[in-house]
Image 1: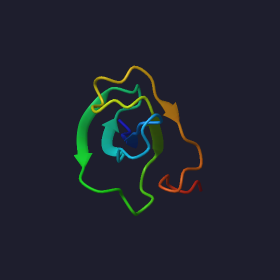
Image 2: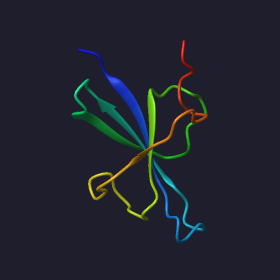
Image 3: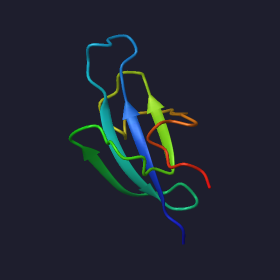
Image 4: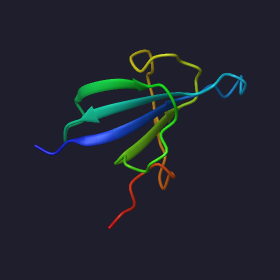
Length: 80
């Protein structure tokens, strides 16, 4: 079973002064969330398989209804 490491960025497009929240999610192949961890500061090393963003101003991963996939994000692992 292959696991994917996903970075979720929760931001607010209406209030840019509100700092974004970063959540690290571990999923299996089907997209089932295995582990969820809130990061205290933005990550610096590109070590994620995918990067998702929600800019509706939500404060938790479970309250979000939709995410946008960010392709070629600086924190995404480089493709081989």
